[in-house]
Amino acid sequence: MCESNAYLKDGENEVMLMESVDSIEPCGNGLKLMDIFGKQMFIKAKIKNMTLLNHRIILEEIGTS
Image (cartoon, rainbow, N blue to C red; front, side, top):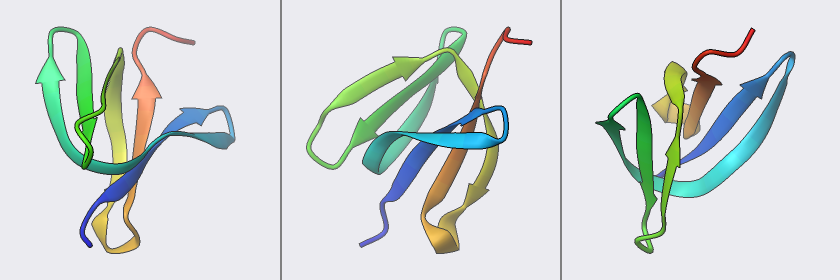
């Protein structure tokens, strides 16, 4: 399978947001994630890093410092 897991960067840690992410769409001031079952999530974040070979998408919240 080619899906990836999405993680939110929280300082030095990464917190899993969603497993089996099939698509990511820019949506307003954030991203809409959808998994292979149709479950959707919106998060005010940007893509920080993607390693598709390792099936990992790292997101960083917008406007947090």
